[in-house]
Image 1 (cartoon, rainbow, N blue to C red):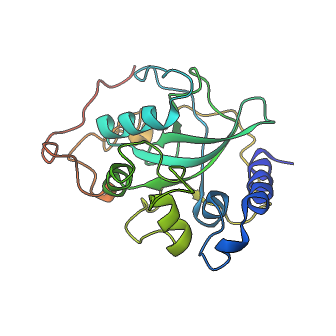
Image 2 (tube, rainbow, N blue to C red):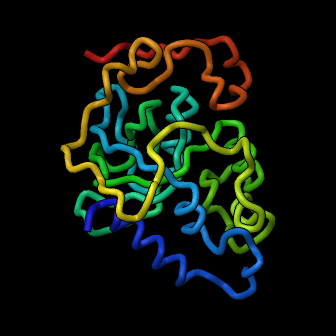
Length: 224
């Protein structure tokens, strides 16, 4: 079984376990169904030298901050840990070539990633409704009018996700890459730095920029 298949099988198993009869008329029965329906495959890559590892257990906050600071797309979904046995609910960032920038695994990278890239505007609106709790898909699934409940009931809004980032999950038998994790593709320069940070005005595909960031360029030092 490939790394990607392990994530898909885990998501299917958890989807069956978490499905509730009272939600049978909802669009999706669980977070896992959303990821299976909309998730895209992202390529594991070493953490760039310009990004410091975050403290364990803070993946959602770390990915959100990294996205805000560098204009990278924020992703929530599932990751297969380096032991190739354990699947976790996780958040990370991605370059525009679909390569993972994951600050939350102690400088390591997971074996495989399947997730949904959200626009900055949708993410900010979603977390604001939960008292600025960081996760979009995992926040208060059972209580209140959370973004997750709205997504489960009605589906993802059209403007919620970043298009054309990552590889579509064509089928559960799609093979995961057997190559070692790559370094961020140097073709990301000039439009994007090698870390995936945007070198220019705020990327329109992310949605509206944060207040005060409309004209500022995101130009971290080019890695050597």
